[in-house]
Length: 455
Image (cartoon, rainbow, N blue to C red):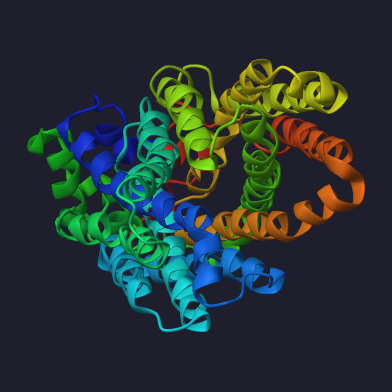
């Protein structure tokens, strides 16, 4: 059986190596969360600085540019990573760091738009490389935990850091013209700081064996992870010689299903951006930053950490995502039916919003963390498969950015919520019907990679 080739990795207990890999990948994802969320905190000061306060087109373009760059970056790095995961690991955060720093010096808004696109390329590259590398290094029993902590949890931690830094500068009464530049540039510090650790991580054994055909090097990596050099013979490893197109066609339904589910997740989760700050925060007398801070600290982060540590591997990917979509849809439906009553009781509205965030943590730890893309595809096509699922999510986010404000305007808040309820329920149904359960299984067992295709 093909999965026996990597049994020394799959059966290894969660070790210091895995913690190091989780932290190294997670710090890049931290940067992604910081860079993509920080713009919303300083968007109005940016528009004011360049005298475009009333330009809805520029506001939408600024918000969507990084997402478009992430789509391009994901597709590009997905194909590049077929020639080596480690070879390009660190280039993604180098792009992130330099682009983040450059934002502090832009002379005009169109320069900022161009730099945000480049920054997005780095984000997209990291969305591909980090989950692929983490999954290929992980043991089967804790793979969900590693991806959940390294991707699903570190993203909101990065977003929280952006909120805290912005609040600190506001508390210090830093002028808005300077504040927005510092907030956007702040993402360069963790990005450039993690480069060394990414460059010193080993190439994954699965890439070395299955794509590069370097059996001895693969055995050395397995030995480093397992800690038992004598028990990782190179003779048990073989190169996957199947044509790329043949393998991709075989797994295309699962790959595009994963992309669709990530798109649905981003379509649903975007409403929270409008729902909480625009409706509940004013009734509580809170500024947007304080509302975002409390939401992250009280709901999102605890649910993400507990979900990663206790649920995703034991409860399963499909139940966690499907029930999260369904419960989130029901709660949003309750809010749509009782919007006026709930807004008259701000504390209760905030509690409902918090429960919504907790429910949506389930899909966030599965589709939103890129787990399905890396688990459903074999090593032969895994990085390209992940790039397609990332592109699906980024397209969903971009559609959300343009479509939901229009829906709120044309249908009203209640009507827009019912559209999202329908999308969430669809996400639950498609999760149960389109993809298999992948938790606690070897990557090779999931993708049924034949052992006969060996060198």
